Image (cartoon, rainbow, N blue to C red; front, side, top):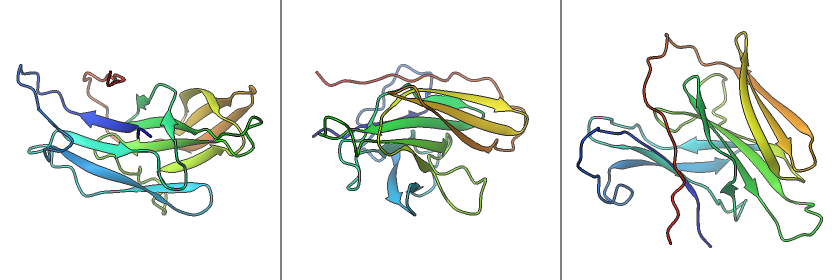
Length: 178
């Protein structure tokens, strides 16, 4: 079974390519670690942006085989939010799950807003996420996640404190090996 990954790679704005960034040591590796019920953390060392091109995170952990990103990732307010679904083989989906990961875009780790290092939260435990939007109201950031039955789950967190962001190019692309 294929494992999906999230990559954050800097664009050097040159014509030279990076080659094999994953296996060539140019990306810092991130790992998902199960925490308390319904929570996950992400571990890994620092990213040295002077010698490395970014970081990557593999999904499909032992407690959620087949985990895949089926909705567009969202990068706003200094964080990357990724919704991942874990389907099952049951027709009525009694054990399908959805997770939302909120990661610091610069290092791929949790956003240090609480005393615990939580990067992933289970959104649904018996359905799959079908839509997601992130909004900011005052100093709160909320992710509105809709499941395949139309129910909405609101995930709320404090917005990371930062200075005025500078404009830069941000994009994502799904890569598919044919």
